[in-house]
Figure 1: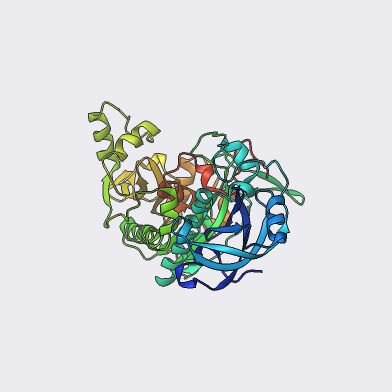
Figure 2: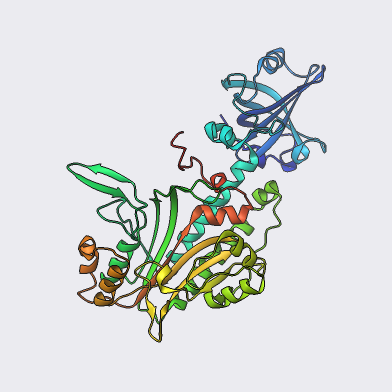
Amino acid sequence: MRTHYAGTVDKSLQGKDVTCAGWVHEIRDLGKLKFLILRDLSGKIQVTAKKETTTEDVLSLLDSLSRESVVSVSGEVTLNDRAPGGVELIPKKLTVIAPSKSPLPLDPTEKVPADLDTRLNSRFMDVRKPKVSAVFKIRAKVQEAFREYFLKNDFTEINPPSIIAAASEGGTDLFAITYFEREAYLCQSPQLYKQMMMAAGLDKVFITMPIFRAELHNTTKHLNEVFMLDAEMAFIEDETDVMKHLEGVTHLMYDKVYKECKDEIGVLGLDFKVPKIPFKSITYDEAVETLKKKDLPVKWGEDFGSEALKALGEQFKDPYFITRWPTEIRAFYSRPLDDDPKRCGSFDLMVGDIELSSGAQRIHDPKQLVEALKRKKLNPANFEFYLKSFEYGMPPHGGFGMGAERITEAMCELKNIRECVLFPRDRNRLTP
């Protein structure tokens, strides 16, 4: 059915017969000349049929083709500087594998724009667009880089459950499900389980998994199902040990995309640059002072809103850290500083106004952990399985979580996080 992908047919194949298969991107009829643009995952190739040299069977099929039909074309590679890639295919055989209905639910050539809802409703067709498929090829490379980095650094990949009995981080943003005769929840974070593995002696673990949050947000930045890239490590001095790995894996993600996704970067028209390391860092207190100078006063102990984060991000070209957050606004397991308990060893990794990742050194003392749960008005009895792991020798540890969607959104300079998800789940969308 196929000997070559469209994007691999180049001038070195001049005079040779090849077979390409894919979708009918476009058809043009100029009388004595008929052009078919064939598209596959690698790119496009021009098929040129001349009445004097092409069989009637092929010409007849070309006349009957509908756009987006799946076809196979066999023919001779010929040089043509005006064709994509400088070559064209002179067809000897054309096979219609699967005809397409007409009209199409949207236009894959993007000559006729479609709104995001229309695109998501027919995502299978939307991803046929080179710009859309480029986003998902970049996302795939990001996830590949994440696994590559942690495997090279001797981390162990683990697979915690997606069905849980109690909230991972407190709060009410959970999806309740019926679990036989009991109520259970979809996992909102693998946090508790990766911490428990620090007591198991694995020392360094990483996770790739979906998580679910029943938040009522309906913005361009929020989803209710997110694909998390998580890591946790034991025997750390403080949170900076974790930040070094977060910095390292983020740099590798950018570097791998830059080196291995040049075609996708070109299709998206990105001015893509690999950030320099080490990343710059500011404390929460320094961020508050900076915002005051910009007439954006933030009360100490509050989180930063979108306007504040945008103002902070304007100072940095590359990703940057915000560190030493107020203990009260971070998760219960964030470890307060020994000499300043109002602040904790937590951090966010930002690029512009997008939060790429959040992490911290965790509390490893069981008594301190119980006290932290109570301060957050959480019942320690609901965390018994988790707390038990701290009572039999838990080393100092910390980690971070990163959403695959957020970093893809930042890299591809997109305005809506749904663009980075094949089939997004938000407050209103449950299908397809």
